[in-house]
View 1 (cartoon, helix red, strand yellow):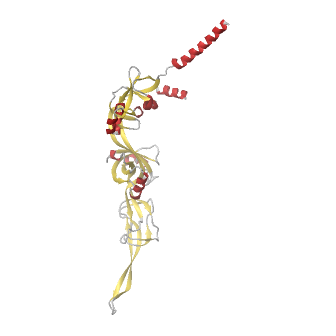
View 2 (tube, one colour):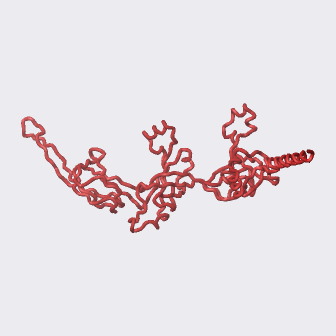
View 3 (spheres, one colour):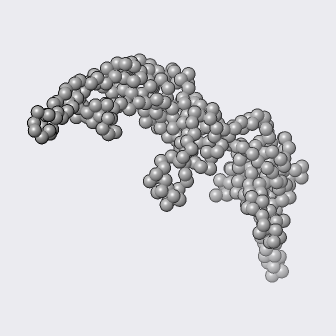
Length: 367
């Protein structure tokens, strides 16, 4: 009986030892991945999407009303300045007063027929034709006039993109831009900002609708495409015109560049409320939101502690952000996992540094 008692006691002790090892023997230190603070070039960009248009496009309407009896061009034709485009038969009626009658009155009319030739005001390509031979047209002398066709100078193309009101102030004329065109995937073209609209894109009714739906106001930025960036695409097959009016495009406008500045990955920076400020409710009520919310990174010291460090940031690109104060070159900064950076990590918390491969492998195994 006594022997059986010792056997059961031994089993129980073994279970307790295994239990304690499992829950207290394992290393529960938070695993993180780090990168060194590095100097690199940062290019700040503003994105926008829009359409390609000719820089110069002229609408052509006749001065005289009449019938279109001749149309000498079609869409896509190249024309030279002064070249005949169309012929209009204009009929004008003039009233004649007969003074031979006892009571003078208008009792006669006379029709005058003349042919009016329409000439090209610029050299370019016929980008649109809106009229057919035999149709009636109205002249600009009486009203707005019928638009016959358009001629575009395709040697100089632009991209009109919409930019939000939050970022329009960053853009200046002569800023460079990298343009991508949907029709030429995988290719990049260079451009220069030529104009920035002073009124919002659309305006009028669209502006009212946007205000009602609380949408962000946007402004049009015109970017001139540099011919040297697309000359290789100009071939005899496309009539030396690689772009067509209305093609979809997007642009990354380079607004600011900083050379060899201290940078960290964007996901290494988190924002948190300042604990000291929150403790003083009177002071908190007088401060702006940006004074309460501050930016931090976590620096790993020689004792493998995560030191919460306040930083000031400046411009950023798609991957990195410039840090102007708070850290030094070559310091180890925690860059992953972001959930820990944003919520879990506390000042002076012990961490275990591992590679990103090990970190995400461990994470997958936990899942």
